[in-house]
Amino acid sequence: MLNPITVHLPKQPAYSYPIHIGAKFLENIHSYLPKVGSTAVIITDDTVKALYALSLHQSLSKAGHKTLLLSFPAGEVFKNGQTKSWLEGEMFAEACDRDSVILAMGGGVVGDVAGFVAATYMRGIDYIQVPTTLLAMLDSSVGGKTSINTPQGKNLIGAFWQPKAVIADIACLNTLPQEHLINGLVEAFKMYLTSDVKSLEFLDQNLERILARDEVLLSDVVHRAVSIKASVVEKDEKDNSLRAILNLGHTIGHALEKLSEYKLLHGYAVALGLLLEAKIAERRGYLQAQQYLFIKTLLQRLNISTSDLKKFDLEAIIQKTKLDKKKRDEKVHYVLLNGLGSVYETENRFAHVVDDETVRRAFDEVVKK
Ligand SMILES: NC(=O)c1ccc[n+]([C@@H]2O[C@H](COP(=O)([O-])OP(=O)(O)OC[C@H]3O[C@@H](n4cnc5c(N)ncnc54)[C@H](O)[C@@H]3O)[C@@H](O)[C@H]2O)c1
Image (cartoon, rainbow, N blue to C red; front, side):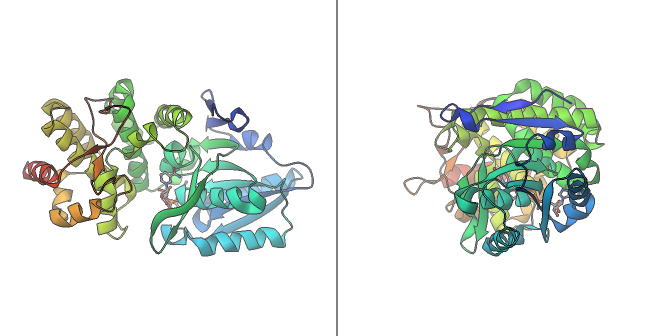
């Protein structure tokens, strides 16, 4: 097991928490379980229930813990208010009190909904993130953003509510479909691009073995990405400035996700966003041609090609970017690389206005080659 990473929250030190990455998470979970008499509520989806949550439930029950297992169907469409209300109803029915602890076991969907239940149940109870997808391990389980989707859009209702701990068992990744592994790897790549040249070299040198699920290397991938995310969250817990860097590739990525009606996985949409936004940075002189090529080549090794962008209508992409959350004064903002491992910053601003014409030219250049 690698050394735990601690997310220090300077404004509220009592809410700082450890992130454990490795195997044998059951041993770690034990020390975070509720007081005698209160309930450990495992919230999961049906897929993860069958794979991991049932055995967690059994082992906690055997060890004498009062344990409740709640699961809902897998998939983004269930990250909604009905699921949240149903979970709360079940918890009330089992007399879960303020000392109960939620174990959010699953991907980002489970983590976001279960975290939001924890944030609001009896005005807030403890929860532990037990992520089982790569994306959840290195991104969504860390940082305390919890949410549900509404008919108006994704993640529009939610709360900042930090977990008591994150316990990531890399062995869970053995059952993860390959496209979900790549989905998470894109987010790791994005984080390294914003802040960490050494991790870019590490990814470049080890990508094939990582794709073949070498556990030691996968632990390293998660550890490196979580270190970056933890340090960003420590400096900007509520997403007011620096945390914007994590949106690299996301102005275009979110537009593509919407255009595909969320059929394109988030990481794949962000990958195409990284390409186009890197080209914009190159056009602005912040990124060298060789550096753009590095990004393109690494994504190709993940089976993500520039030709995938051709499936989208450029003007429709531009229209969708106008709904981006980073928009200010009616202008669309982008996080732009400033070389590899760094983002462009002026006056503590990390997202910058890019006009439509620049996006059009960058798009043409990306898809032509
Ligand atoms: N809170 C945040 O900061 C944050 C950050 C990024 C993404 N998110 C959210 O995360 C969600 C996406 O998360 P995701 O990509 O993990 O998707 P997901 O939770 O839908 O999981 C993907 C699929 O993998 C299955 N699965 C999970 N673990 C598995 C395992 N070990 N083996 C086999 N199958 C497994 C799930 O049942 C599901 O079908 C989105 O809703 C997104 O908005 C949140």
